Length: 200
Length: 323
Image (cartoon, rainbow over all chains, first blue to last red; front, top):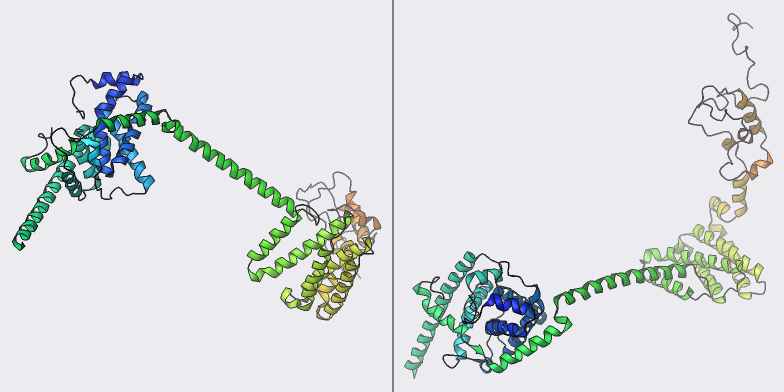
């Protein structure tokens, strides 16, 4: 599965052309994956500017290393997200930030993206990211790769160096946890709102 | 996309999470990121191979630099240790001595100070040998240290130790005064040392004084051949049964009685060999153990009586108890 399904996009052919330094094919690969990579970076760092820089680094690395890429059981998306993960680790190391640190989505993120369906409610994303703080690092990783970057289980397994079945069960556990967290939170806010009404 | 994995219970959660994948970059941001990526891809630092090469080169350079610096430092320290007053590296040697004195425990400092004093004496002697002028500050330093040692000899290991060091300094200053008779500082220091030695005389025990303060007695002990040393030849580990002790007996006893004057000029390592034994004929050097010397009880027999003639070793049967 690829991040964005397009009818005229044949990844194998595009990669072959891109490896021969075809600028148009390289641009097609970029267009195909840039949103997925950017969202992954944004939800992990919370800062749209940093996410943009890291995304640029990932594609710079892609352009440099593309000639050496061979499929050999590693899908291109998984290969690209391995680069993304490595760049993210470099960023955390350089800024001496901890991976577990809570991510607060910056309000500037609205100016960077557009949504196809409806106006972006940044608060909704904020709530989801807040709930994900209760997940383990590995669980958060697979949830974001799945839902923010639209990778399938096989690709996620290649990125996180795990068995696809292990990824599947981990994701199941993470979803149950998230469901409980979100339900508890809604209950809490409902009670709080009712309490406010009664006092007013 | 996720219907194959999740049950209805998680549908609501997955529906909310699907929204994480909805936002897309604006065209402006998309174009900007692509330009950045292209620019970085063309920079040499963006290549992973070129990132690793400088690190390997850096570590190689660093390691070789450290080795070269260590070698240079070692050679400079060694050269400074060999330097003499007036040399370019001499201040470095003195500085290292000061550092040593500062770092060493207080209990060992006195010993080190005396070691450095002896080193000063050696330096002065070397200067005299090379006919180079002796700096007055070195003489003054020797005088000061000696004065300190004489005042409190017990803190420098006792009068015997101090006297030993004074003897060396006296000899050194004597050489300076002989070489440079007009050097008043050296003459004064020499006189001070002689006076100090005299003041230490009552505290000295006889034995160490005779050895340490009178070098002539040492020479006497070295050059006078000891009779015991002459009489103890080295046994040879490879015996030859055919050799007989007879030819060896005569020269051995002769040497024992009258040591010849040429013995003093024997080369080192042969002082204890009797002159007569060096000229033993070939084939007789390897006498078996116990046969190369005179038999026990016959060492001091006079010449001509060392051995009974053949046939008279044993009295014939029946004549032993005759008066």
